[in-house]
Length: 357
Image 1 (cartoon, helix red, strand yellow):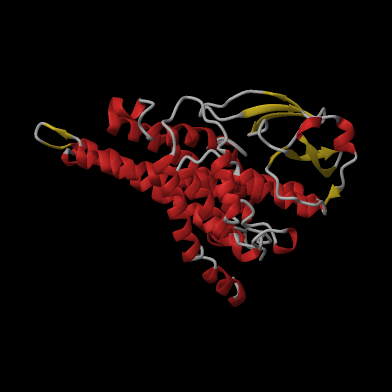
Image 2 (tube, rainbow, N blue to C red):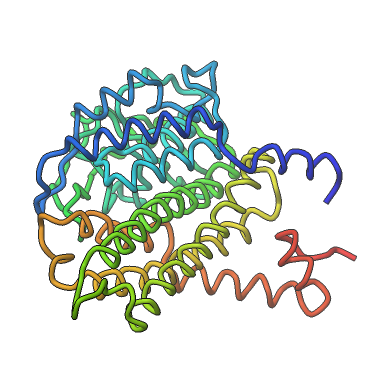
């Protein structure tokens, strides 16, 4: 790694502290005032309007396109903070994916709420987050061996309302092929990078939810008493909490590493596939353990609608498999390691790419 790259990585290790404080205030206020949770999670237009007024809905979009021009370090901080508050708004879809696709295709962006999807060759898209709520849907469509990006108004899309495990809108969309075939082509790199960007966005969201889950578990373990003392003093509970903290920290470290490389290189780092793969694998494996252990520590109270825990754990289980399952990303890492060979394995681990010597 050359000196210039090292300096850029060092400057992108953490988001702007003023932004972090703003996010803490905004989402703490939202958490304190949100209505009692139910099994159904609907888009919150009031929260979206507040975030829009603060410039947070287009945080990472470039300034010429009307955004704030923030790096992925700031974008990941926003996604994590929103996920920790279980905020029902499509920040990842609208900003780091849809806005980026529009700019890559040279299409205008009026800032109205969008979601994003990848329709199949017949124009059919499954599990589109907040599809019913979007004013327009940005579709990345594979036309033969090339990619097109279409910004399709909601009224031209047939929407079948469905929900995911977390109770969020996760709709099926059917596009008119004429809208997709008339869309501009984009570079092949856009098509390849979309999957990586989406995967890393989901990692940032899961990490935010994991951090908040750990907070809830620690608070409960210290407050809940059994046999005259807090349950956090029992060795079995301590082991569960320690595993949550360990796995959450590993997921956070892997995700922060990938975010830092993305921010420092503007996604041009050739090691991004490996970095995102490690993050997605660590996050996915951590998710299973953290959700299981958290519900064991909290017991029955953690399964009630009134408690906050289910607002975190159900989205964690949904997000871990989006933009590639754990198995798929583990297989990707295995192929990269096998291709690197014995001499290239250490450079792959330390730099994200095998040595060419």
